[in-house]
Amino acid sequence: MKAEEKNQTSENEIEEPVVEEAQEATENTAEAEAPQKDVAEATGEEASTDEEAVEEEKELTVDELLQQSHKEKEDLYQKVLRAAADFENFRKRSLREKEELRKYAVSGLIEDLLPALDNLELGLAAADNHQEAKAVSDGFRMVAQQITSILQNNGVECLNPEGEEFDPNFHESVGFQPSDEVEDQKVIQVLRKGYSLNGRILRAANVIVSSGPASEEEGES
Image 1 (cartoon, helix red, strand yellow):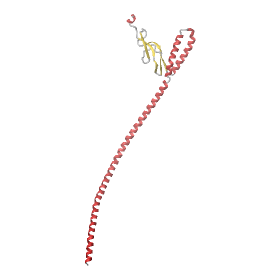
Image 2: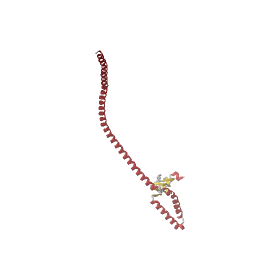
Image 3: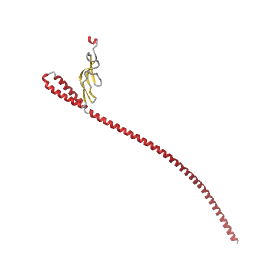
């Protein structure tokens, strides 16, 4: 009997620590689960708040995207307008340059031809003093007229401003001469004709300009 009581006592002593350890483990588990629950609840609240913020951000983003889209559309429209204007200016400039090139492409050739034409006219003027060479001079005069006609058809204009008002844009004065017949600042004599090509001066006319009636001092001297 004593042995059995002793065994039961030992079993009770062994069971009590086991029960206590089990209770402590349960309590520890509960304590460990409590913060996790709190974290889960806090996380859930934060997730809900984030979702609301995202929704608000989405609403703001849509408005911003619309504004940005309108701005990009306006910027693109302005770029298209500028590009169209630049292209139109380039087209007009190209046409203008092409037209100017067509008009003045032969200017160098004509400038080289003018001295020969001057010499031809001087020769014809000298031939007028020799009646025996009249037939020959008439033939060369026809050639000179033909050359002049060809030049006129290609936009060349002869400047022979005798009796006209002196214009420094078209005339080059080589001297002044008093005259009772020709008014002041008018051309008395053309020493060398000038030529223009489609309104552009190739060579100014060399002229003598009137300085008006001679003064008494000039007349006495």
